[in-house]
Length: 174
Image (cartoon, rainbow, N blue to C red):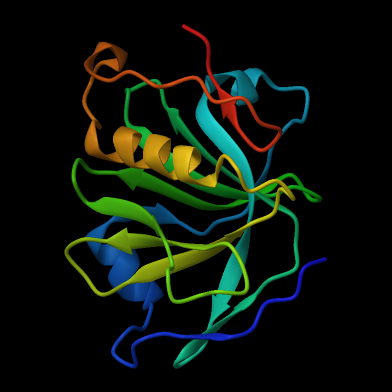
């Protein structure tokens, strides 16, 4: 397990669950996924990533094994999800409105591979750390996530994904 130094974040950043729930479609409800389910086949992109625990001015790694994935539901809404891989429990499921989210590497962290999901119209942030030991595809994964977040329309024809090979990435096949 890699160790991370705490990183400092702006003192004005605080996540308020009430704010998130009232201003975005986000759910922190837990539910189990059937590991044999075809749900994984619907994932547009997925990669191993843990959550970061946010304090007043620092974030620290949550050591649970996690998975970030994006998929479209039956209504063609785009979802950004985080799942605890050991329990197969989805803890974050955000229905993404077009242009509301960005996913970026935290450049100020020199000791780990920390990424932030930014809500563009609020100061709220969700932090994650890459868990796959190989780092060479991190930038491409980040670009694919942002392409999906930017191109959130009602048709898969409106965006194209580049093929990236790596154990921490899965791309659906057309």
